[in-house]
Image (cartoon, rainbow, N blue to C red; front, side, top):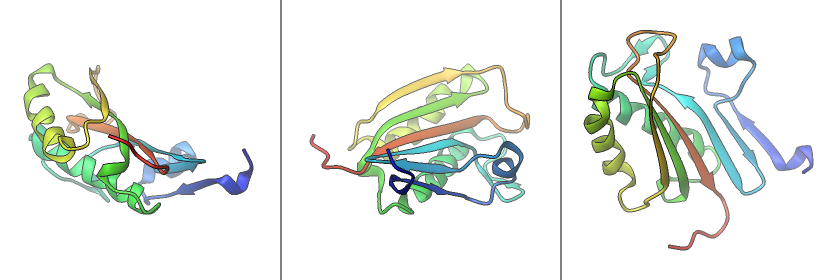
Length: 134
């Protein structure tokens, strides 16, 4: 794969600079979106609310793939990382609202925690830029 076929998008999240990473990378027909939380700048949206955090995080991730001309219909894989098992129903409800018609493969994990203890949900996306068949 040539360097011309790989494109990176930054979101301005400070962790991208700290880690030396991108929000999203397109490589050929795949677009990968890094772990995304409900932070927008220095503001955490939905503090204490896993449903709202999942919606905001997925919306931010979808904005990242929009940089490549894609939308939710192009998503083929999602991952949800939750700080607490008690938040499964709320996070799943947010996921279903956004992706029910798409039905990407999905992984749901409960993790030890996040760098900021107020974060309840982190999400990742993978999208496909080629023809999508149902």
